[in-house]
Amino acid sequence: MSSPVAPSPSRVPFPGTGRVAVVTGASSGIGAATAERLAAEGFEVVLAARRLDRLTALAERIGGRAVELDVTDPASVAALAASLDRVDVLVNNAGGAFDANPVAEADLNSWERSYDVNVLGPVRVTKALLPALTASGAGDLVFVGSTAGLVSYEGGASYTAAKHGVHTLAETLRLELVYDPVRVIEIAPGMVRTDEFSLNRTGSQEKADAVYRGVREPLVAEDVADVISWAVTRPHHVNVDLLVVRPRAQAAQHKVAREDG
Image (cartoon, rainbow, N blue to C red):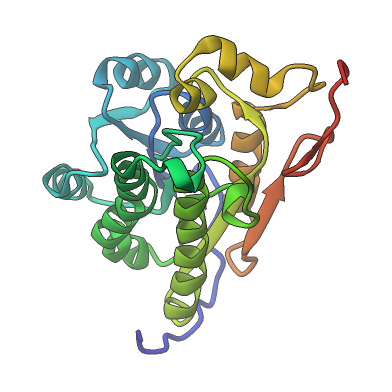
């Protein structure tokens, strides 16, 4: 465990003071929306993802910096860390779901991919950037988890198991870093309609559309970005341990109001 440090005698100003925020999975969805929102809040944003063409276009629009990153590749993560002089905020957003199979029909390749992207990826990036977050004197380590990491449900256990891993990762780090100047924040969204998440999971646009059919106002990426921005701009002694955010139409994983019944 890290040794205790004396509390800072003064608050670190938020935001607009040159604080650097790294957002993984920033080429689309929640990651892209978060990068845009943090840039608007005055952060210097480093957008990291595999699809450099998308990153570059967004980075140019918001005044950020695009860095190609594959969270499953240790060399790629090391290159990201080596390119950064300062990190104040890390948003571990890269992740995804890759099937909706029951356990009896599990595709183990999908399970391995899900664990590598959702769990080992954040571990790699966190381990690489944690020294810089600590050196900042007021670091924010954010995990974009899911309500799937809190409640299990039928179908797609490869994803729910991985997101349970993200949840316990955040909990463990909060214990291990309690003497260090780093907050550990977990944001757990419920139903969020984005262009790619359900499409990647189901493999067809028709099935992806069916997930949200009849649901009045599911969350969108900008809603989650708003929550992330709020959490990292609280005074640094305020730690948002876990914030669950769902659309009003979703009372629980299994209870969703649909207008078509």
